[in-house]
Image (cartoon, helix red, strand yellow):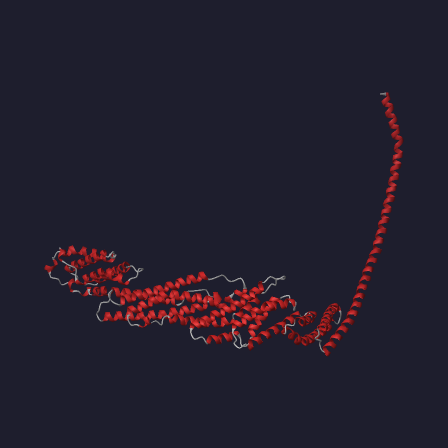
Length: 633
C-alpha cells in the first residue's frame, strides 16, 4: 500500500507539472487556427478578385471573336459579292452572245451556274439578297429558255452525251424538275408523231410500243437525266401521252366499234380491247416491280391516274356493252315457238325460255367479267333486267289471253276445269315464272359469292377506273322486275285454281235455287234415309273430284304434287257448299234428309281423296241432324 501510494503521488505530481504545458500548447494551437482562418478569408478575397478579372477578360475575348467573325464574314461577303458580280456579268455575256452547244463549254457553264447558286447562298445575310435572288432567277429563266430547244432536240435524238451536258446545266440551276419536264415533252412528241403517221391507228400497236419503250425510258431517266423518281416520271409521261394523243385512243376504238356488224363482233372487240390494255398495265407493273438499288415509293394517286387514262376507251364503251348484251338477250325471245296461237304450246315455250335463261345469264356474266372484271355488274345488270322485263311482258300478255279464253268459255256455258286447255296453260306459265325467279335468285347468290375484295395494287382497281363513285357504292340487288314476276305468279296461281274449281262452282251455284229443298208432299217425308240417293249436282261434283288425280298427273311436274290441288279443292268445295246450304230458305224435312244425304256423299268423296271435311260443314251437318228427329215426330 505504501508503494502504491508512493506511485500515485508520483503520477499525480507528473500530471500537475504537465498540465500548464498542455494548456500552453492548446493556446498556441488556437492562435494558429485563428491565423489560418484569416489566411483563408484573404485567399477567398483574392480568388473573387481573380474571377472578376477573368470574367471581364472572357467577355472581352468573346467580343473580339465576334468581331473577328463579323470581319471574316464581311470579307467573305465582299469576296462573294465580287465573285457574284463577275459570274453574273459572265453569264449575261454568254446569254447575249449565245449559249454554247459544245459539251465542254456546257460543262463549264454548268459549273458557273452552280457557283452562282452557291454564291447566292453565301450572300443570304446581305442587305441586297432579295435583289440578287430576283436577278439570278431572271438569268436562270433566260438560260433555261435558251437551252431548252437544243436540250429537247438532244432528247428527241436520244443523244446521251449532249443530254448529260444539258442536264448538268439544269442541275447547276437546281432545276432538275424542268429537265424532266423537257424529257416528257420530247418523249411524248416522239410517240405522238409515231401515232399520227401510222397508217392504221389501232390501240394494240400503241400499247405494244409503250410497253416495249418503258424499260428503256426508265434506264434513260436513271443514267442520263439522273432522276431520283424515274418511275414517277414514266407514269406521268404515259398518263399525259394517253390523254393528249390526237386522235385519241377512245375515239379510234369508238369508231372501230361502230363498224361491228353483229353483237358478237362488238363483244369480241371489247374483249380484245381489255386484253390489250391489260397487257400494257402488266408491263408497267413489271417495270415497277423490277429490282433496283433504290426502291422508289410511288404515290397511289399517280398510279390511278395512269389506270384511268389507260382504261378510258373501255370506260367509254361499257354502256355499249349493256346495249349489246341486251340485244343478245332479247334475241333469244325472237323464237318461232313464241309466235304461235296455241295457249298450251305458248306456255310451254315460255317455260323453255325460263329454263334456258340460267345458261344465258351464266355465259353473259362470265363474258362481262372478261371485259370489265369486278366492274361488269353495273353494266350487266341492266341487260338482265331488260330481258326479264321483256319476258315478264310476254307472261303478263299470255296470262290475259288465258284468262280471256277461260271467261269466254264460262260465258258460253262451257265447263272449264281440269280438261280445259286453259288449266295446263296457266300451270305451265306459273312454272315458268317460278323457274325464272329461282334462276334470278341463284344468279344473285353466285354473283355475290364471286365478288372479290378490292385489289391491293392501284393499277388493278378496275371499278375505280371504269365506274363512277355512285355505281361503285351501289349494292347489288335483285332486278326490279322480280316484284312483277312475283305478282304474276300469284295471278297465275289464282287463275289456275279458278279454272280448276269452275265445274264445282257451277254446280254449287245451283243449290239455293233447287226445288227439292221444300214443297215436298207429306208421304215422301216419311221415306227412310236409305231410300234417298245423292242428287245430281253433288254426284257431278263427286265424279269431278274423283277423276281429278289422274287428270292432274298429266299436267303437273314432279315438284307439283296432285294432293296439294286436291286438298285445296276439297276445302274450297266444303266451304262454299256450307255457304250455299245456309242460303236455302224454307227447307222442309225431306229436303233436310236429302241435304244430309248429299253431305254424307261429299264427306265420303273427300275422305277417299285423303282430305278432311271443314269444321263449318261438320257443324252444319250436326245442326241439320239435330233438327231431323223433331221434324219426323
